Image (cartoon, rainbow, N blue to C red; front, side, top):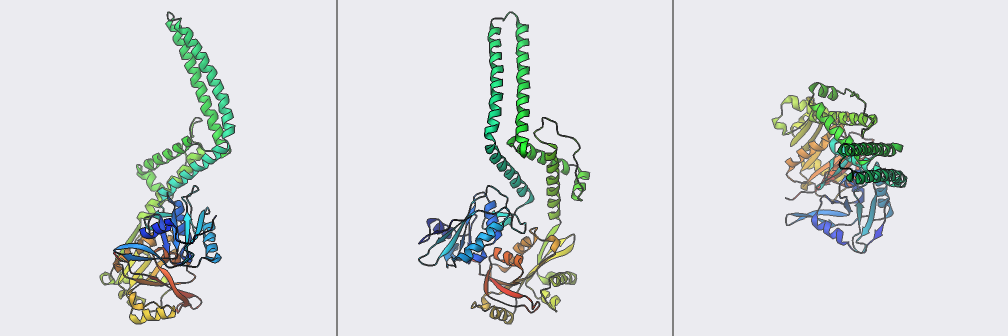
Length: 468
């Protein structure tokens, strides 16, 4: 899974990555515990893989964002945690870990190759890939393509194992075809001397062409049978499956009644059997029916979501009430939520069938509240340099892991215009913690007791000011 190499100074590759800043091939983390399964899966699912550098801060110099070494813990503990996260991915992600800059501030460089067994997902079933300097959830059509590519790779491996056996069968067929072609050549050579008997010559040629056609059909049949033994696949069959799926999507979308049936969750059944000489089996066709139906339902489902971001001052009382009610469902706030929502800087919510199913907000808390939070967290950071708080993040359980909360927050944050932010979350809320890290936040200070949930503790997360 990993090869640990100790390097006295920074490697040439690491220096290049620090100068380039975060990108499609590099991600920076302040500490090893900031690395999560999403990061490993995103690079493994990407075409060129990538590098994760732990122990790095981002700074802006001459309007360019670059990485600066701050150092981190490179003992066995953090490395073992990273390895466990890689193993927990489905399927496990292969990584190599390098310890660099040992003479000064040591860092970890985690190399993630583009995987031959993609797609990978996190233990929570999240499929994503690297897109620029961020991780992006995979669209259902992208996921379908990766699955089909994976099947093709699986076929190639199985084909190599069975190559000797298939080659033996092909040698027999080749010998048979050679004999047929040799006989045909002899007959055609003789026919040159029989030009006067044109009808007889054509009859002989047609007979041998018919025999060659029959032999070719037999070859195809035998090869098809060989490939399908032990569920082997071949490239021709893969192309047939993909084309079948493309045609099926087009057929469904062009038939309004059929389209409504699929979107409503109706099942599709095979209306005709595949012919014996088809490159697809009935099972192939049935599987593609299920894949295409799910793809269409997921696509139409996503269209039902609507993201709204606005100032509370432009909201009517009904909107404030509905937003406040949904925030209260998260159990993270006490009394007076209605008035607190009105004082927020910006609020955002997710509509599904005209119902609010998710919330988030940018708050501009008072100096006293900020000082209280930072003091409880035991951090030396200056509260006044973090004017905005990201909070009231809640999403109804049936709508989670569909990428909608990420969409909402990505539309909400630009309102802060790059200002420094802070957020708090329960220590037990692993999903929220991972999301904050993905958004560029880092954990600061120590855990402290939650006033709303005394049985749990809170952690402070901060994101530094972004420079244009």
